[in-house]
Length: 421
Image (tube, rainbow, N blue to C red; front, side, top):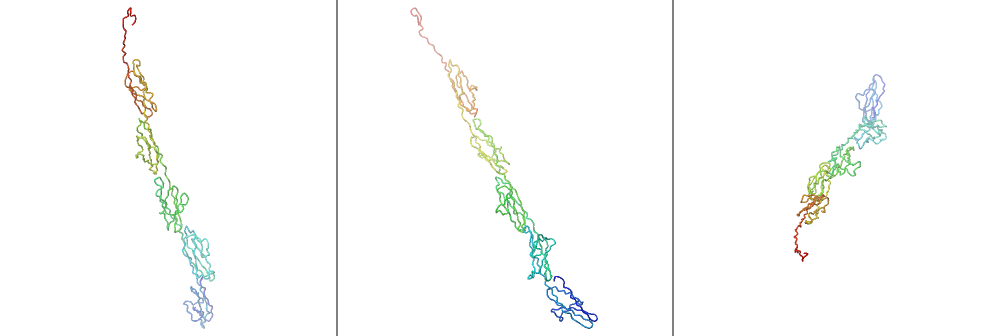
């Protein structure tokens, strides 16, 4: 019953002292009952708790007579059987839960009233229904009262909260893309979750469509973020990493690119002044791997410079030219010395050169022309100031001073008859 059964009281009168004895029976009869030990006062409170109908009567005795009371019928109504429902868990995915209370017998639920209470939880709504909504962990008690009988019963359910966030972790094979390293693996498999992990990736605040794997391979710089969600409670955590890129090519500088000439027979091509971030390595078209090479032939020369920091390379080509245009030395004024021509001027200024000509005669003279008074072989070397090339020319100065033999005929004596000869 919802409240204790009230006391049964009998009033009797007679001569002398009146004694009482209470009996219970299975029917509404004052005979055949069962004596209730200790129930010997004028009132008795039944102790029955099981639902059913119970019958009680009392026999009062005095010195002169005995009398039985009428039968008192006591009906014990059934308590409602209340179940507060299964325990529930509040998670990040389900921030509120609905409790599922029930009561039996339920054929006349219209007569039940419901009241949920809690000491440390929060009931958001439905506190007077079987299915309230709650939002905090705690113990929740459902009390069901039968409005017809006043009987009530309670049941308690536990609500716990599981909002433990996972720990998202990104392990990167590297953090900088280079000319050598064109792909980086980002792996979130070591993220800590209670259940199963699910993954979503984004790049520069844009979701990467269809990418739900624990690891991804990236080929572009940017800010990458992974959201790891725990299947047990729907809670999530995010982690991000920035991938940079270094693909600056070396800037090649080659010095020493001079023209090969008759005097410059080799040049040194030097690429050591090239601009790199780390250390430079070199590969020339000749197969050399030094920063500079010495070349003796005209032609096209190529060097590839590679940066040790990012593996990026650049190639530069230079053309080594050659100027060995020959000088054409020529001497004019080569006349024969005679008795009347006692000197001649040998002139090499008409020699063909690209730049300015310098001269060196076999006489030691360095002028473009010399005056000679003796027969003989004379040589001039003409050098071109542009390419240092030289040419030598020789002339022979001859002499003709053959003596004249004078002969006179008709040398006769003038006479009186030979008056002329």
